[in-house]
Image (cartoon, rainbow, N blue to C red; front, top):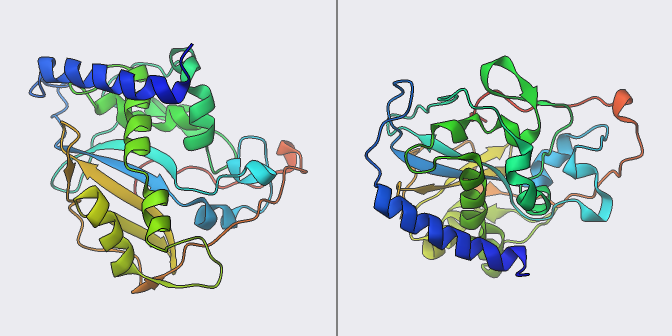
Length: 259
């Protein structure tokens, strides 16, 4: 049986053929106006994990030597050109069984970097992946749960931001500062479009890649950034998972995509 890494590109090619046949001019059930573009949001664990004060089993920052050391997925978000976004467009319930064949990849490349349950649509709580209420607004381009997650994984693999930056000399460090313009330029050169970068103080926290609805790269719209001219990509050493979840102080996932 083919490996997951071999299956994913094939699945993506099949889905793209389906999307081209369907087209991208439908309307979302329930009257929600159709989105304008996608934003692939990537988190830098070295920045976010520094906020972890106590560990729990659901937090990938607490996995010791298996803690993430590259950008991980935050989500694939439908957005509007006016700077707003749709969320919770359909009352479909997240079903982890639908993505059972993807769980190993999701645990590695799309893990939660927080403890506790994440907010979901319609005032619910659930797994970190169930937080992706934006996935319910991806119609008519993406029409079901499995397609949403496999599409996001494929984009993540195709545009490997960690590799792009490492090859340009921007590697994790707790002492080096890098020019923000250099980081943006390295991504632009490979991605052929301008990303959006968000920081927590001087440290890169999130990078977003933007796409037209046919998944061709496009410039992100925001001209503002929370980053200074020189930024860091901090390395992070896991605390381990020695504390019980009942004794954990945790940072919950926010209800929307704003940083």
